Image 1 (cartoon, rainbow, N blue to C red):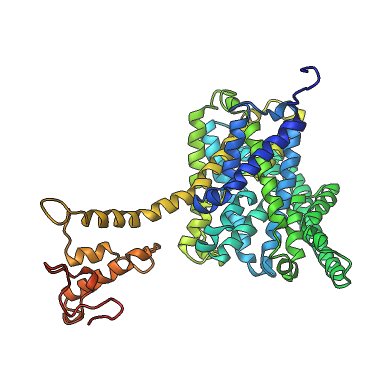
Image 2: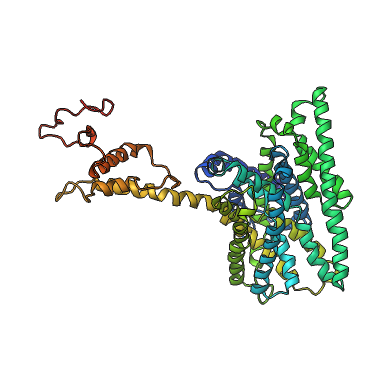
Length: 526
C-alpha cells in the first residue's frame, strides 16, 4: 500500500497548503486581529512565514524551489505595481495638481533627507564608503504602499486619521516607490564609471529623462486613453460588471508590460496611470462599493510576507563581514527608524499644505514604513552588482542583510504602534475605573478605603481634563462625573445649595429609605 500512495512535499502541494491554511485561519479571526487588536495583517503574515520557514518548523523552504533573487524581484514588482495603481485610483479628483506643492515637498527634500540620513547612519555604523552607503540607503528611502494601506484604511484610520492625511500618505507612498530609481542608479553609476561627469551625464539622460519623466508621460497617456475607452464602452453597454470591476488590475498588467518594454520606470507609470484613470472621479465613484481589488491586494500581501518570512536567511544576516554584527544591525535599525523621516517631516510642516497641524505631521512622519519597495530595490541592486565592474565591492556583503533587517523591524514596529497607542490611551480610563472601585470597597475600619474631597473627585472624574485631551469617558461613568461636577461647583459656591441633590448619592436613613424631597433623576427632585 505504501508503494501506491506517495506524499508530495514539493512546491505544488506545499505552497497552496501553507497559503490556504493561513488565509482560512486568519480569515476566521481577522476582525479580532485587525479591528479589536489593531494588528496589521502583514505583521501576522510575516511571523507566520518565519514560523513555517527554515528558521521555524522547516515546513517550507522557497530557496529549494526557485531562484530567490529573480523570483523575489518579479514578485515584488507585481505587488508594488498593483498597490501603486490602487493608490492612484483612490485619490480624489485632480489630486496630483491640487496637492502639487505638498507632493513636491515630500518627494523632493523629504525623500532626499531620508536617503542621505540613512546613508550616513549606514556609513558610520558599518564603516562603508559613503557611495556604498548611498546604494543601500536608496533601497530604504521610499515609503511602502503595501504597509501604508494598513495605516490609511480600516477602523482606526477612519476614526482617528483625517481624510486629507490619509490621501497625502497614499499619494506619497505611491509616487516615491517609483522614484527610487534615480537614487539607486546615481550611487551605482558613481561606483561604475571612472569620472563623476560621465556618471552624472549617464544618470541624467538615462534615468532622470527617460526612466522618470517619460514614465510619467507614458502613465498619463495610458490612463487617459483607458478612461476614455472605458467610458465609451460603458455608455455603449459593451462591458459587463465583472470586467468593469477588474479593469484596474488589467490596466496594471498592461502598463507594466508596455513601459517595461521600452525600458522606462514601470512602477511610477502604474501610479500615474491609476490617477489618470480616475482623474474626473468617475471610475472611483463607480467602484467605491466594490471590494474586488481589496480582496486581491490582501491575497497578494499575504503571499509576499509569508514568502518573505520563509526566505530571509536569518542565520546568515550576521557574520558575512567583520562589521556586520547583530549589535550594529540593532543600532542602525533604531537610528534609521528614528531619524530617517520624522525630523524632516516635522521641520517642513508649515511648507506642506496637505499636513495642517503638528500632530498630523507627527503621524505622517512616523508612519513612513519600509517594506516591499525596499526588497524590490534591493533585488534590483543585487542583480546590477553581479556585473564584473562591481566584483570587489564590500557592499555586496551588506546589502541584503541590512535591507532585510530594516524591513522586518519596520513591519514589527509600525505593526504594533497602533495597539500601543490604544493601550496608552486606555490607561487614564483604566486608572479611573480602578480608583473608583477601590474608593467604593468597604472595610471594617471605615466605609471606604480612600476618601476624596469633592474637588479631588471632580478632578478624577475628568473635570480638569482639557477639551482636546483625546480620550472619551465611558458612558457608565457619565452620571458619576456629573454628580462630582455638581459637588465641585457647590463647593465653590457656583451653584445654589438649594439645587436638588442627586438621589443616587444621597445617604439612606436608618429605615433604609431616603429623606423626603428626594425624587428620581428624571424628575429632578420631588
